[in-house]
Image 1 (tube, rainbow, N blue to C red):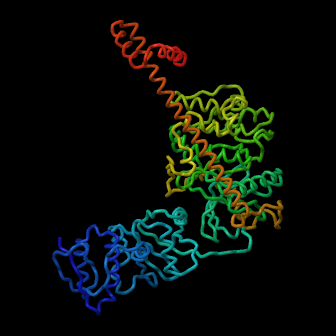
Image 2 (image 1 turned 90 degrees about the horizontal axis):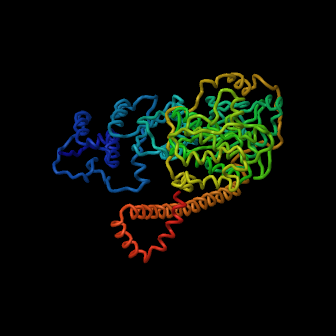
Image 3 (image 1 turned 180 degrees about the vertical axis):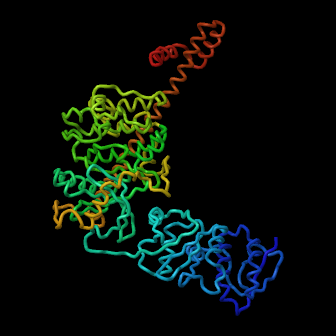
Length: 608
């Protein structure tokens, strides 16, 4: 295969910079899969622009493809140098290609796809800056390259056609780029006042609705990040006296700090709404994913159930009774890990303290909740059982369209299980769904006791908590994983209240201490300390579980050996001649039959 070297007339050198940079970049990144073909295809064009091409045989791959007098070499470069070489910005004015540019925009896009490159064009006013990147480039590296080149205060890079999904993806750290070309514009920071308010957010789309709230996907004007904005109407709060409930929710969310709970960034009051700015989870509700799957395998359900249980363990250790476990309140992030959300029914309590509120979803209500005789954190254990049942069967236990029938079944009927479930998971759910809270699994050791059940014997709890295990469900990053068809009702009224066209005429406050800004959080050191203690606690559960598993394996091995001996004894009675040989062998191995006979006697009781 022949190779080529260019001898370039000095007077033509400036006009050839684009071509040389492109070829050099491709060569360094080992992306020239069709090296010879590219040169042959370009030779005709090059010669028309005043280049002389000289064929040279026996040119080793280590030789450079460059101007004759260039001092560039293709030795291994450091990462910083490689990044500079990977980025090849070109300034284009009036949205047209510069005169004399070697490759036009359409051709560049085709070549970038053929040569496995990514083309990024950044629009700044009437100017365009063109960047060519290696396929291995990440979102973080693209932002760094653009910032370094443009020297502007940029908080985000957005698509020029305002594609929400791509814009969100570009705000994430260290994510691979999956699009061959991106047309982007820069977002500069906008700060409207000393305190965070509605003016600091661009409302994009309604993604959820609760009993007395709506949730919108919003984008921050301050930092370009995407958040979920939960709005609770003040008129509703005043009418139904829900102020204490909202204050309690705000206090709990400001207090907790766990990888599997939704994080609150800001909370404040506007004229018509109580506002929570929350972490956005693009994977949507677990309910949405479950609806798509119909039901999960035990292995899939086990992963999510462990993440949920470790989160419940943390909440209970913090003295928080959740009381609203259900698939609708469990969100998934882009990687498929869970976030427990909606702490509106949660309550700060002690393990033995009774609460008397009647709250929750009908299918998930524990018997003691229905009886209104007071309940403890054991209601969360019951809800865990109901959740697991729905994950592996597709429906909660005692499901019915008639709410009263659900209540009657919870109080009076025994739960039944499909035959395809393993005995271990049936035993676990039976323990969690026990009607008597004093006989329910977890009554003695809480969630710690639940996680030591034999169904979890092959699970490494620490690895799941530390997110070392890949989730079984990976949400589609190219679609909005939310059910939005029934969310338009009341949307116009909410938007009119947001801009002040409806609702209250003057600003007023319901709460004295509701404002929260995560940047001013003075509890972060305590939160991190408590999280470390929680991680140690989970690790200790795992170690104890491992020791128990070793004992089980040892006991199973012992049982297997004893079973074989029992079979040998049976053979003795049925075949005297063969039995005599076996007896002699056993006598030689054990030193006598007395000890063996004693073991067999005890083993018969265990095996039976």
